[in-house]
Image (tube, rainbow, N blue to C red; front, side, top):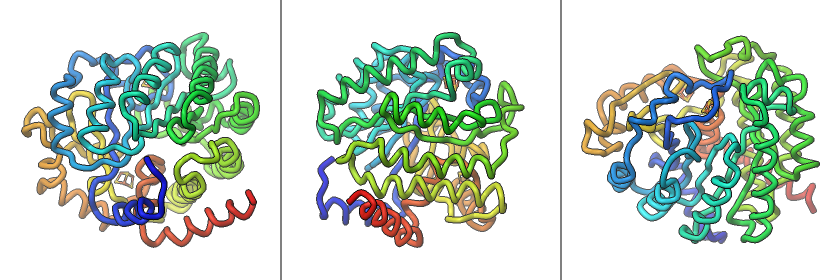
Amino acid sequence: MRLSLKNLANDLRFNVRDSLAYFIFYVTQGCNMECAHCFNHLRNHESNKDLTVEEIDLFSRNLGRIKYMTMAGGEPMLRSRLETIAEIFYRNNKLDILNVSTNGWLTDRVVSFVESTLNSCPGLTLAIAVSVDGGRETHDSIRRRKGSFDRAVKTLKELKSVQERVDPNRLAIFAHGTYNALNAHEFLDTARFFSEEIQVPYSVALIRGDGLPDDSLSKVDIDHFYSVFKHIIPLVRKGLAKNYPFRRAGVAMADLVGDVIYNSVKHSKMTVPCKAGKKCFVMTADGDVILCELLNIVLGNIRDHDYDPMKLLRSDLAVSEMRAIKENECHCTWECFQLVNVWSSPRMLPRIIGKAASYAIQDW
Ligand code: SF4
Ligand code: SF4
């Protein structure tokens, strides 16, 4: 992705229009862990239903431009031909940024995926988020797999050495933690450890979903979360490569998402209208098109609809659900869609610019 004023203006126009910009694709439901906080655990271990690469190519041709995409799972690194899948979206959908979320267990696989994808997709920026939910003992206990903290750290270190060999515009590395009742007390220390010792930014999600393997993890104090979140933002700012695309604006938006989450839980209030279905959607590994995961609005399966997600996203069901979301001023803590809501909302633009400008002055 090349940085220029023209690209920035095009981006702004694209962001505020009601055209799709982001989607989350569960590339496989296979996983090598059984984490206590996994909102996806009921779907996991059904990888025999995953879409084939040919089916993925078919549906991506019907999607149009997608700026930003997350590959999740399951564990994406277990998906065969993951590099080919990344290249499909890069070629067919002119993807700018691909975010891949991994538990970091399979270090060599992560590194080979990154090296291969950077080679085959020359204009793509890759962002790899390795999940780490606390110090060694806490993380291994949440992940229910001994050694998972050490493996995640090893993966981050290997990725750092790849980063030194490539254009820093093209590879961002994050440690990513899910704040929950078990790690709340050490969350900020964990963020400091990754920022200062491993030298990668530590991004935050708030635990979500019902019927988790261990529901007690959801009992969190939102004021504490908010305070931790606000302490972590400067660490993220410090940790991102200086020339990472739109670094300050990205951090400003992440910061504002913290306010959106807090308003939703603390005041039961919508901050920005949700663009679920208009600008963003989710697809499961077996082809279900989901307008909103939290509300469990499943529009149908692409295998029954000519491999065309747009038909489902423009269906009467989708239109009426989107209307209800707007009329009910739906709000939630799901940072992925809330980030889209923040960057695609004209009313947030002055706040994003204001924050980004204040970071620039502080950095000066
Ligand atoms: S690694 Fe991810 S998908 Fe797998 S069980 Fe843990 S949270 Fe769920
Ligand atoms: S606000 Fe949250 S729960 Fe409501 S539709 Fe958007 S993503 Fe779903």
